[in-house]
Image 1 (cartoon, rainbow, N blue to C red):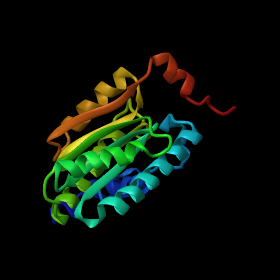
Image 2: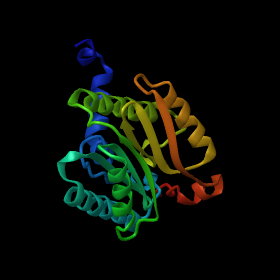
Image 3: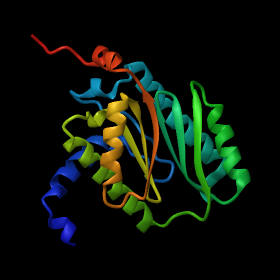
Image 4: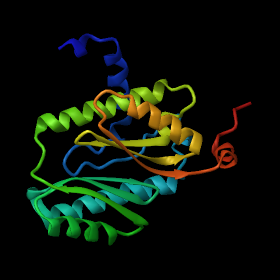
Length: 207
């Protein structure tokens, strides 16, 4: 209960509301881009963002139709790279989930992080959501990072980072995540761009 009275709660709640569509912590959760004044920091074109949302919807639908309720699978897509996390009851289901996802239109690649385990309980999933919220708060507080440049997914204490960032940003974000309470492991699925590419993506200040 002490956490509920801590001043950081207000920041975490705000971040959670603004970026809830980026989370992939619930069964068959569909991630998405945050549309705000900082949308340019996402570093994907509007077309790529729509493609990612479509990929997540279609993949989740196919997985649900073919695997039903016996699995707990989260789908997160960033720039057409799809991350699958969660639990499946057998190695066959794990392979099938990847095959179904790979056949979705516009999918460029699939990272299969599914574990052959029993489904996690609500307590574990709530813990993962809290860890993701803490990570986002840390990214917001970091002076040299744009939090919206990252998609954050946490599964069983492992935090995955997706996004288009420079090597400097990747290293800085990794340091933030590693020191976040509750993070047991960091997996980077980042697309590294140059500093010049970053400058080209940064919107010019309005006159």
